[in-house]
Length: 182
Ligand code: ATP
Ligand code: MG
Image 1 (cartoon, rainbow, N blue to C red):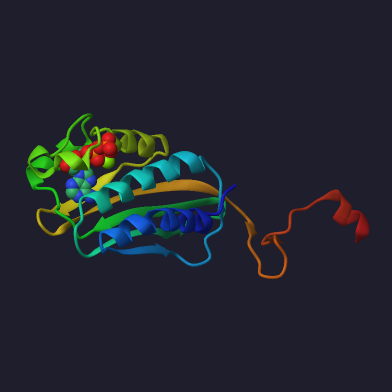
Image 2 (cartoon, helix red, strand yellow; image 1 turned 120 degrees about the vertical axis):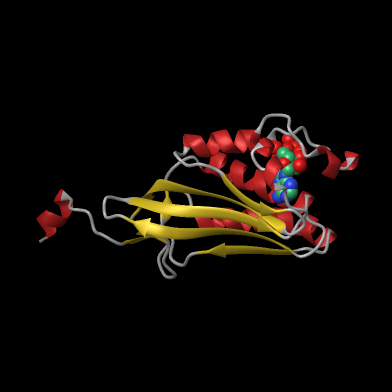
């Protein structure tokens, strides 16, 4: 299991210096009371990292915001989440929007040499999101900004962080020891 709040805090702290350098406001938004999640934290983190990295790289004023929103929680232990990274950057024209997910594609006229990169980030991110059973979506307007988002379902654990104890059980599981005690 992993704690999505911790993951977001780490991402926030690691990108804050770069955002500050460019004078951008960096925001992380999370739905309240998210449970501990199960799944590939490393790959999830890689996708969000790629998207935040791009957002900061292609934004010169305004903000970069990343968020996770709870859409639905089923009682069989699955939570549906929407992740999004938005920016107020250069944006991507409608005719380029499909292309940016292709391997080695960069919107050349807009990428300065010093921006570097290989044009792999979004192609890899799209495949990783597919491994989670989702689809990486893009909404963007040239000159206004971009939003990359995806919805995925992950198993969650009933254990939540509590202020007093490190772990608190939401739904006590039946176990033989408890029965003996009763
Ligand atoms: P790499 O990620 O491999 O370092 P890259 O950032 O150029 O290189 P991708 O992340 O795949 O490659 O992005 C492809 C192209 O899509 C970018 O070169 C850029 O033209 C465009 N792009 C990606 N994200 C944004 C964004 N947030 N705003 C504007 N353009 C973007
Ligand atoms: Mg990139």
